[in-house]
Amino acid sequence: MENTATSTVNRRYASYVAVGDSFTEGMCDDLLPDGHYRGWADRVAARLAAEQPQSPFRYANLAVRGKLIGQIHDEQVPGAAAMQSELVTLAGGLNDVLRPGCDIAWVEEQLGRSAAALLAAGATVVLFTSTDPTRRMAGSARLLPAVLRMKAFVEGLGADPRVAVVDLFSAPCFDDRRLWAEDRLHLSPEGHRRVAEAVLEALGRPAAFDWRAPLPPAPPRGRAEKLRSDLRWLGNHLGPWIVRRLTGRSSGDGRAPKRADLAPYEG
Image (tube, rainbow, N blue to C red; front, side, top):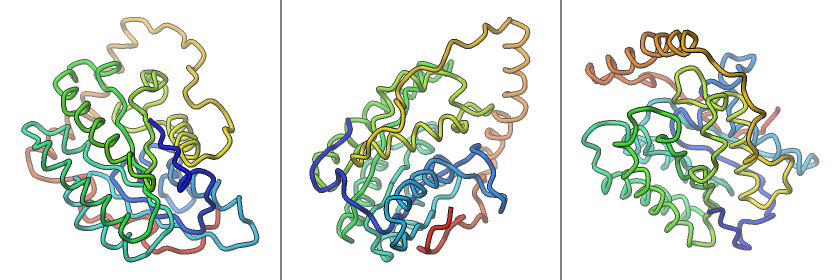
């Protein structure tokens, strides 16, 4: 569901803050000259800045990979609210859902409190539904009840006219492995490009392309190629992820946001 209330559609924004985890940090998109990933949020900032070339457009990205929703609520939301940005994107909770024993009611509470704090600061808030992991990842069926519950919760928040909801769950294009990086958790550059367009559409911008459209058919992969891909994934990505969970570490430990200040955006 994309909320298209008049308070969000076609409004011009002079400032934008992105909060969240690796999804919003931009993991696995193209690398920028400073070594950070670009990501869909940077792409959105570039489009919004281009709408008003004669006025300064300010942008901050506080997202850090690996963050849980409680950390986003405690570490990022207060700073984002204090910046009093006109637009904030808020994505979080999937890292919690991926962990066994996730308290989904607590996740919803933290997400709802985060959205409320940002709305109270005067922002238009953009929220997201997760893609459907069961359509592309074997063994992910256990996640579906929590994903569906989060989807309904986010759509409920979208009843507020100050909230826009980007529905990624209902877009089958994200079933295509080419929209995902080798780790199968983070978007590829094409995936980031499509999410950016989805956000802009939710904000009422004219479509630059159909972000829901399927990619051209991919060449078939043989069994040997699939096996090599699975082995690389197990060794390079799943194994290290499990080790971090067992040792209580996160990929974002000690990492600072890539754009900690609400500063003029220069593409």
